[in-house]
Each structure stands twice: as C-alpha cells, then as structure tokens.
Length: 165
Picture 1 (cartoon, helix red, strand yellow):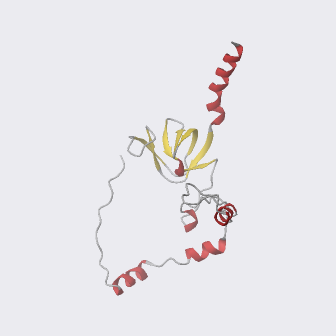
Picture 2 (cartoon, helix red, strand yellow):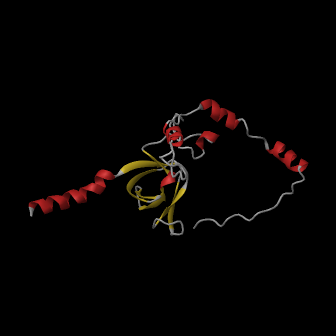
Picture 3 (tube, one colour):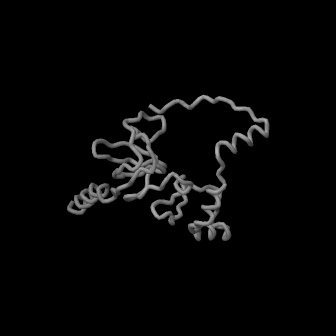
C-alpha cells in the first residue's frame, strides 16, 4: 500500500519537474486545444516568456502569468532566448543569440542508414561566410521591378488569407 501511495505521489510531481521555461520566437496565438483551427484565447508577443507544461506532437501546452493554452512548438525556444535581428539569420534557422547553434527540426527524407547523409547532418556547423553570401543575394525593390519589367511580367493582386481569430 505504501508503495502504491509513493508511486501516486511521484506521478503527481512529474509535471512540475518536467516544466521548463521557453521564449516565443515570433508572435503566435495561444489556443484552447492543440489544433490550428482551435479558438485563439490570446495573442502572445514575440519574446514573451512561458512555462511549458507538456508537449504533444508539434504542440506545447504552456502557461503564462495569467492563462494557459497551446502553442506551436516551432514558435518556442527553450530557456531565455536572445532573439535574432531581422537579418536572414533570424528566419527559422534555429540559430539564436550568438548565431552559432545549428538546429534541425522535422526533417524528412534523411535516413540514418546512409552514412554520408547522417554524418553530414550530425556534423553541421555554423558558417558565417556562407550566411553572408546568402544575405548578399538580396536585391532592392527597384532591381526586382526592373527584372520583372524586362521579363514582361505583370503584377497581380492576390487576396490575403483571412486573419486568425
């Protein structure tokens, strides 16, 4: 009987032990359930701090100072994060702060049985020179408009997707 009581007490303490702090990488909606079409309870700002209570697939159940709900896990960075600037380095690369952490999430098509693929992924390193070369590929709006005109491309108005509620 004592053993059963001890197991029950430990299982009640596990959620508290598993809780971790996380920072929002971008603005996101706090949802009532872990689904994109679930009602949004609130908008949380980029840089907000939350406590992660549990994870379920691509979702994390979180608690703020005033309420709790579900956020997409890709919107979160564990711990207190220094958010990147608006440069190319900040675009869902998994690099934060110093920009020297490489993170991969949800990659499909790589099999661990292929030595050349799995070792390349496991040995990934931050490359500031490659990032600078990628950022240098950007063009101004005027250059893009000139290119479109030379190619006889026509501007088309597209309807925006509806706002999340």
